[in-house]
Image 1: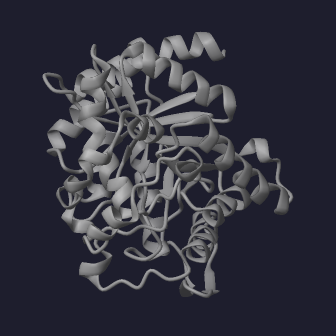
Image 2 (image 1 turned 30 degrees about the horizontal axis):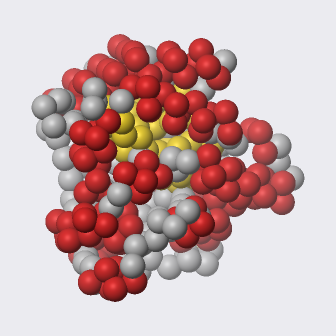
Length: 343
């Protein structure tokens, strides 16, 4: 089992370096930076983090096939791998941020991810590529330097069954956002397994990763309140579509969802705040890690006992606390109990 830290480029680079150093010091295995428009540029940040760490794996979580050509991603991740001493790891997803502003047509995302991985892996092997896919085109090109490794680990992030099956078929790992319940984790794992079996792979070779917003506080209600606005956005935007919402009676009223249906991605959380009165603790618990140390331990143990191999947290500060405290508390107070319980 591994634990990872995800950071958004909404903090200064200096702060990100400090948080990455803290994560490495307290035992995190991976540090990810979101490739999110229009925050600080992901590979610039990762390069700086590589210079100030020595053990953690580093990579984007996630980059996409549309805003940056897969060949440029291959070039960037190979460069990061060289700079970091073979610590690069690549997270790929369908993406959404900045697409409206950049005029990007996000078509056939699962196919685009599959084609992206094929092109990247071929380039990292040092081979030339002449690729004509349904989405990706690359005409008789190759990297003009020898990558440090021919096989940087690639993880596919998706909350949709088709993308999860693609991860099972061709990736080293699969990432699901807001996968906070055993029910959701098992449904996620089943799709990954189906993709692996169909491709003739050993399903156990594909890591299952839950990507969760996290907040820990002495008072569980304070932690849940910190994440309640993000849950409102999750449910209002409707992009995640967790399987368990309908089965557990957690879907929001149709009329409430219609009121925020036209909110642009760039509007952030603010557009969804009218939904806050509808967001119960059950909603928060179903989509995040939020509570006391004991509550979070219980939730993570259940996930790891079901099918999850790794937890990536994006840490949030409770009222009166700090993000750094959440990073440290998860590693020093939650994770050791999880390891003892799960083995």
